[in-house]
Image 1 (tube, rainbow, N blue to C red):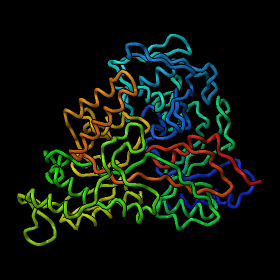
Image 2 (cartoon, one colour):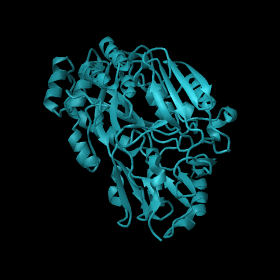
Image 3 (cartoon, rainbow, N blue to C red):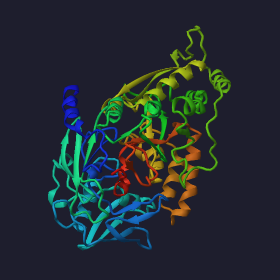
Image 4 (tube, rainbow, N blue to C red):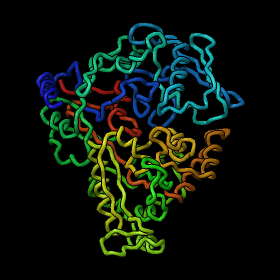
Length: 509
């Protein structure tokens, strides 16, 4: 990796100190999509598919607007959506995008195990090249969010290699993917929307400190910026603080151990989960660890229309945490600093995504904070494949935050227990499930909101998640690069910034 990176640096070194608008923009957006760029498998759900385009999109007020679609209507029985398409949308190979491609995309996404939940989709019907209807098994007020999240793929060019060499109708087309190094894109000449200023994008993949070094030496013009690097930013650079609904929290295994990879006899005790949450000083984390570029989190929905209104910010109270543990029989009998109960120590692992400085520092800081109440946490950094093997038996520091209320169901409904990375703690509560079911089947969006709120408030009593902070998304750019008016971003720091790529401008001449 290091040797290939040196070659790459030599290749792009000539772009430093650019003043006139460059034809190619070099940017670093964080993690490389290891599975490629297949939107039916979840690529682009959090953020912007860029290569593909979607039926609908959201503006900065979370309102729906047409993208490929020009009209959309829900039937009176709330069991079907009829969508009318533009007739001038082409894929980057010049072929026309039609309703057949839309139907194929959603059927393929339904068959694929991914972050898209299309289990309620019964069938898709095509009545003309510009008209498609989605039929549901049951009313679902959140189904329309899939029309924002699923990028359309070409039926005639889709195969097992698609994720590696995608074709779409988005503002940029795929050119080359040098795995572990970069993705090269070029303007799609057939794009139906506003033309981006930059002819090409090279998206660099590297560790955070490497990306910062590339930026400081003028080799890239934009990089995501972890909070800890704020003070390392050159005075000549521009810092963009973009509003987001991106949060971090600990997801707890809430069932007792049944096998080496399912359940946890320590974290399945509600008192342990509550005590840890009480021992975490979120205000201190925000002010010191995150340099003030965040705020304490009470839910996965903070700042969104379905934010629970009767859920207070978690309190920091060491003495109350100790009292809870004492009353529950968790006692440090041998004086080693770790409480015990029934021969089992209050000690467990906390997994986090390695290479992510915010998650790493949060995990380490939390492990230090809980020592004060006699709990021992061992932070373990790992890749997602390794975390997937342990996340049903060990707590994980996760990140979520979506423009869709359906994410509340993904995290708390028993139907998603053990599905992908959603309800990995295997939480199940019948009353919560009922409220979530009622929210999805509500007769209107406004009627669903209090149900989403009540479900979260009820679930919080069980502490399946300990929410920590909501992050600001920070970007460092060349002072000549204007990002326009970035959208409020969901989870996935980096790629969502491309949502308004057509507004980006080079201001130096």
